[in-house]
Structures are given as structure tokens and as C-alpha cells.
Amino acid sequence: MSSILEEIETQIAGLKTSTTKSNIGVVREAGDGVARVEGLSDVMLNEMIEFPGGQFGLALNLEETEVGVILLGDPTKVAEGDEVKTTGRLLQVPVGKALLGRVVNTLGQPIDNKGPIHTDSFYPVETIAPGIIKRRPVSQPVQTGIMAIDAMIPIGRGQRELIIGDRATGKTTIAVDTIISQARLNKAAEEGRIKDHRPLYCIYVAVGQKNSNVARILAVLEKQGAMPYTTIVSAPASDSATNQYLAPFAGASIGEWFMNNGMDALIIYDDLSKHAVAYRQVSLVLKRPSGREAYPGDVFYLHSRLLERSARVSEEAGGGSLTGLPIIETQAGDVSAYIPTNVISITDGQIYLEGDLFFQGVRPAISVGLSVSRVGSAAQIKAIKQVAGKVKLDLAQFRELAAFAQFGSDLDAATKARLDRGQRIVELFKQVQYNPISVEEQVAVLWAMQNGFLDQVPVDRVKEYQLKLQDFLSTRKEALLTEIRTKKALDKDLEAELANALNEFKTSWQ
Amino acid sequence: MKISKEIRQAARDFVRASFVDGVLDRGKVQSIVRSIIEKKPRNYIQLLENYRRLLRLELAKHRATIESATKLDSGLSKEIVSGLERKYGSGLTTDFVINPGLLGGVRVRVGSDVWDSSVRNRLERLQQQL
Image (cartoon, rainbow over all chains, first blue to last red; front, side):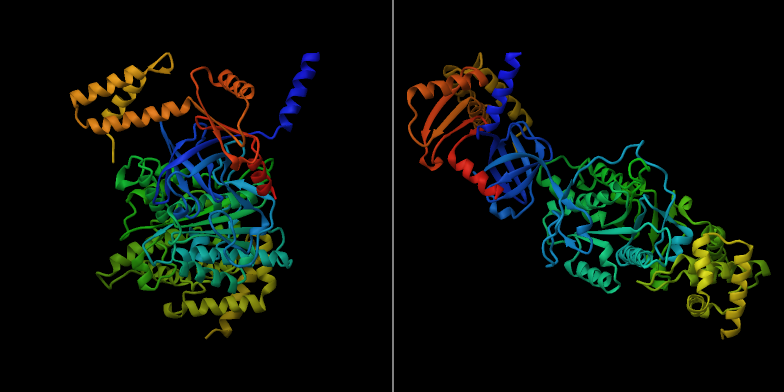
């Protein structure tokens, strides 16, 4: 008994002594944002390493006699011979609602001149994705407000949907539209206009983007009133490759806080092509062996572990979700390149944007044939399913017939009707940027199209008809729209009411 | 400069051969160096440099540097050395250094482990906490 007491006493005495044990090393080589350190015999993988002057690095390569450390701060301040020490900590970022409305860098430090961020929660940048038991299937929609996506390639909360396309085909615009749509829904729910709405918070991660682009997106989001529900994590092209490599992981941690606290979040990685390039740079400077296109062997794991963190978790685990919208830029439409195929195989579907369509004026330039959503249809509300079920097929048939009809002008009535219908659908799906359409308006417009109300409208006036119809419904038939929104399905009564409203509109439309 | 796999392996083997029962054998080191210089295998300068580096790192693992603000009396130094040998095994080479910059207390470094009870360290920690 007395020996136990003595042991406790010595332990208490040990606590009182102020001797600290640390594990140190010496910088042997520094350059290109990487330091090679000798010593550090107790270092752990991904551990933060403290440099003199309060700088930090991450131990990425543990070798026989050296440790490869990537530098998080100013690499010019690290010199040969500097004494560094292990910290026993992993890289963390601040998380919580305090980050909404802010622009932060990779380390979660504000860069928007709006003062410090007050939060007491921190999440490690690298975490393990939720396991099988914690997850549940996707069943709630993310209303992007883009009719072509909500009708044909629906996205559910917790899904990973890739946005892929050449440069300047409107990839970021789709992402920004989605953010604006969420902000409008969140605001409407706060004002009591929508019942039972789970707010969806957005995180936009800019990797390797031009600073001017990030500033433009910030200005758009502020103008549209979306910033109160959005965090921007910015690692622009002028940032070090280390910061660009870590930014998506930091963004995912900020999103995970919402998921783990029973809320829903949406994260946009813009874009993962540049992220892969930044990681390639880090890996090559660390002298890791290179593989195809000089990317390191673990570039697939880099993206798979990042995107696996998007999930919808069960009620026991809080019931939150993190939806991922990664963006990939292709070169000359080549989807079979290394990084695009990797990310296509990881995600639950892709929205493929085509340059040709874009220049024909079909914007958003979504290629219906190549775009899919593998899980999102389970998340569509019934009303959309009722009106949009056949749209994808109609459009596919239209494209086939349109190519065929170019050779001859003699067409039978059925083919002509199909072509006319197809042309009108294409027109309906054209949508100007930053102008999301609410789901009930989408239902009404698509129902009108399915039931032949647009057949008499000339193709070049379909857009005008649609806009006026939306205007008419939102100003004169608000009760009908509200009913569609609350019932979430079209029954006989609603269809009759819709038909009446459309007939009424027809008389005024010229 | 990139060092080939063969040279790295050879240097490692030479380092292993330089130790007898965990203690560096001066004679062996001299004979290894002499034989490399005589035989002049391919890239022998690189081999020697790499051998020297590995030897330096290996020796640093068994070197204890004891820094103190003032000169330690012999009783205390003996106590520290015996304590270190209990922890790290025999065969430690010890250097006693007087470093007035520590202000007070002792700082012991063995390999890459540092035990710091100096006043300066305490002040630095206090500064960080504040």
C-alpha cells in the first residue's frame, strides 16, 4: 500500500518539476518550401514541427537519417543550421459558425480585414472519413436552382458530384449559382417563408486561382447576399504549393464541423486539377518517386481520402451531411487524362460541360449524354420526378434525331413533334448566371412543357414565355407555388389548378 | 548531389562494421578509411563523405551535451552522467559546456532528445503562454 502512495507522490513531484523534454533536429537544407532536417528521432508522420521565430512545418517524409518537412509560413526565414523541435500536434484549423461570412487562408487565419475570428473549436486538417456504420443513404436534395441540374442530374445532400469541363465553360458559375440558391433558401427559411428547411452552409475552396477571380466571386456572393452563409478558403496562385495542397483539407475540416454538429454543408473544391499540380510539386521537391505524368503514386489516395470525407451521417451521429462539388478542368475536352479519370471514378457522378454547347449559347453548357448522377435521383422531390422523369430521354432522342434530320427535310409528324419538343426543352434549360430558379417554379415550367402549353410558342420566344410565366406565377399565383412547395408532389387538384393558371396566363401572353 | 543506392548501402555496412559491442572502434575506422583510399572503388569520395556523415549521426546519438549556467561541481556532474547512463546505456561520451545564456539550471542533450530545466526555457514558455 505504502509503495503505491510513494509512487503517486513521486508522480506529483514529477509534475511540479519544470523540466521539459523535447525532440530536436537541425535544418541541413532548405529551399523550394521544403526543409530537410537531421535528428528528430521521435517525429511522427504529419506532425507539426516548430521552427525558430514561431514558424511551423509538417513532417511528410520520414527517412533513415533525415526528415522532409514542408513549410507553412515564409520559407525564406528558415536557414541552414536552425534548431527545430517536434510539437506532438497535428495541423489544426479553427471551425464553427464564426467562420461564416469570412475569407480565410489555409490555416484558417482571416484575410478579409474583418478582424479576428472568435472560435474555441479546432479540427485537425487530416481526419479519417466517417465509416460504414455512421453513414446513411442520400435522400435529401440540394436545390442548385439550375433547372437542367435539378431536373436531370439531381444532387443529394452528402453526395460528391464532379463538375468537369474545359477552361471557360462555366464550371465555377454552376458552383456560385448553387451557393446563391442555398443562401436564398436559407434566408427564406429564416424569414419563415419555407417550413422544415434544413439550412445548407457553403464553403468555397479556391486552389491555385487568380486573386482577381476570388475577389470577383467574393463580390458576387456579397452582392447576392450569400456571404452570411458562406466561408471562402483561399489558397491563390501566389500561395506556396504547401498551402495549395492543404487548402481543400482545411475546407473539408470546416465543413465537417457542420456535419458533426447535425447541420448540412456544401463544399466546393475549385479546382482539384490545380490541387494535384500543387501536390505534384511538393512531392517532387520532397524527392518522392514520380509516376504517370510525374504525379506521385498516391495522387489517387490524395483525392479519394479528401472526397470520402463528404458523407451523410446517421441520426445517432447527428444526422448532418457534407456535400462535395469538386471541379476539374480538362484540356481540350480530354476526360480520359489521369486526374479527370481518377476523380470521375471517386465521385458519385459528374456534370460535364462542353465548350461547343457554350459557344452555341446553351448556358449552362451541360452535356446531357455525358452527365450522370448516381445517387441523386433518390433525393429528388416527387413533384420534380413527376415532371422531369422523361426529360433526359426526350433530350437524348432529340439530339439523335436532330443530327439525322439535318440530311432531309421530309419528316413524319411524330419525328417533327419530337424535334419541336426537344428544341423547346433546350431553350427552357438555358439560364442566365446568378439567377437560380426555385423548385416550385421549375415544377410549374416543366409541367407546362410536358403538357404541351409551350408547343404553340415559337422556339425563339420560349425563354421570354418562361420568364413571363415565372413572373406571373410568383406575383399572381403565389398560393399555388406555396402549395407545390409544401405538398412536394402534384396531385389531380394541383394539376387542375396549374392548368387553369396556365390558361389564364395564355390569354395575357402575346 | 544524388547518392546511389550502392554507395548508401556500402556506407551503412561500413558504419556497422566500425562498432564493436556498441562502442566505436577507432582502429577499425582508420583501417576502413585507409582501405577505401587504397582500393579507390567507384565514387569513393562520395562513399567516404557518406560514411563520415553516417558516423557523425551515429556518434551524435551517443553524445551527451550538458549545458549549465555555471560550472557544476563534480558530485552533481557524476550524478547526471550516471542518470543518463541508466537511461541511455553505457558508452555515452559527455561534454560539459558552460552557457551563461541559460541564466540558471541545466540543459541536457542526448542525440535528438533535449531535457531542459533552464531558467531561459521556463521564461520562454511563460512568454508563449502569455
